[in-house]
Length: 244
Image 1 (tube, rainbow, N blue to C red):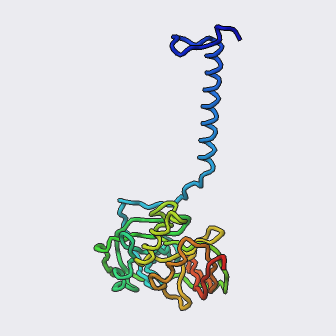
Image 2: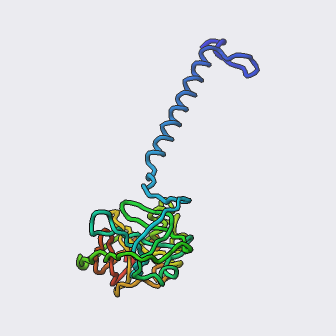
């Protein structure tokens, strides 16, 4: 190193060797920061492909079923099968009180579609429910799949299916607890990623605060599993924390 390699801050220009060294250090640090940023991005859990068509009002027509949860049974064109849309009210509220008077009736209503992985839901506009005269279709057959034990996380179906993303985990605990307390149908997100609706052992909806202690916890659910069309429901005989 010669005297010309020394750089004093008040000089207008650094020596050539020093300038080259600083440029290499800055370029290396910039590359390192870029690699670190990309690693963090790629390591994050991607958002699920869940959709809430907020602000898009659609018209639906079908038969209202109220047990165990409000649903609209919509006939599929060209077949005897029906699509099942869970029904919820705006905000953190179930639709039970709004559709009770229409149980078993053919109706037309408007609402915003929510869906994820083949599971569908409609946030209804309660003012638009109208009974209509139309041939009614029977609901899907209930198939008994036997007694099972499932491990997973209890979620509120509205947020998980699309209104919130990711709609699960600790960050969503308080929201899920309020939604379930408001009558949103509870569901079990199983360890295999399947969504299964939860009812009590009698096949009826749980009391609205019955599952609060299990939200955001790994749980083990034992009970009878049934399938109605594409919807699976477990009649829970027992629910316990996964670590117990």
